[in-house]
Image (cartoon, rainbow, N blue to C red; front, side, top):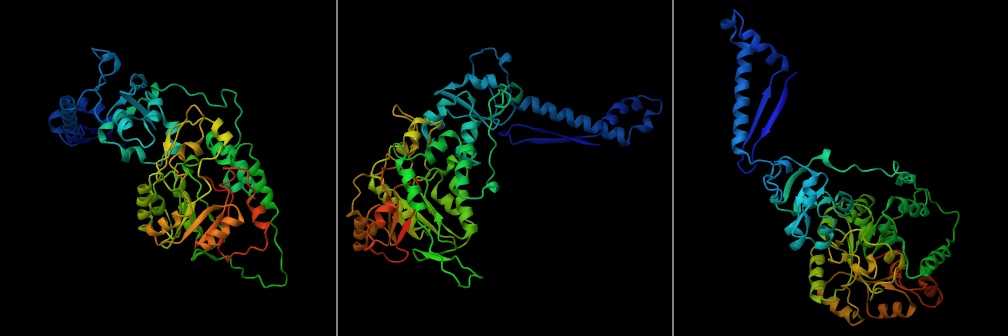
Length: 477
């Protein structure tokens, strides 16, 4: 069997040499044959090939020695305080060396076995701020990085010089598993095991991180609104009609003039990256495969263009949920982008003039800072707690009012809906002002104690047009 040995020289020199070595037995027997009494006629064939390859190997190794930068391990440094002379992309770096670079002015981290110098990137370019990177300085940050970033993020966002090499796996500290340490581990629930809607709660609680679960499941204050929402929707029952041909049932309908395969859509829940690195990208792919509409949150964890590009249907429909920024030119710029991306409608959130008080979300400290790919809102922890809803929503304009509908009309020709109508009086006013749709919502039970469906049903004399009023109490920012 022949084996290949590739000798890769300096990336800067642009050199690469590859030598194929023959079977080990050829080199073992060649010298003996060369020294035999019949050596002269035998200096051909396999022996000559062996000598030629040996010479090529020596030349390659000599070239490698003289032209490649040196990799000095800790013990070989004359000055222990001097930085490691590590050529880009070569050699194994001891974990002890990584640990030396643990300050804001000298910040190395390990992600998926690769060592990066993020000193300048943290200070100048990281969307989630420098603090998140500095907390991981000098150690392996794979565990906190991977759930929040899609594959290729760090490779595409860094200059080549920031990649220092690969960490030596033999020097990494031993990680004791939860099973070995005696900690009870719950069985993860596969989505294929889900039978009914309540099963999603059980699966999410086990499969998500504690912080993601606290953010996605928590309601306002003592969570009274959460329970009231459930009671309200449990009171909505079907009135079955019989003796109708349902052999070929058709669930298709129209929302905001757009056909959808089902009378449901993907709500604009923010920061889906907390549940999976691909976040809203996967939701876009699923929506395309199912031919339903996805409404994208301004606080999505991925950039808007990447979400839209992740769609799997050529005529896929997207709506945009819009938070109006305190800095109105930012919202105007976002509207211009939305207009040019083929969105079919815009829903302006009106039920979150200020972030709700989600106590469970505040109690669970944020494990890492991360920013929305659209709004730039950042997840962080401060002396008030680690509430994601509060920390990412600081940019929302509390001055938004009815007069701003005219301002919105000046910046888009798309249909405009109001997301967060919670009483009949506001529904009537929206209709009078020519709003294209209302979205009944109390911000996913996260803002204050209100009982949307009860209030709307308490005045049966009020009627709305078909497809004009939507109901969804479970969306979050």
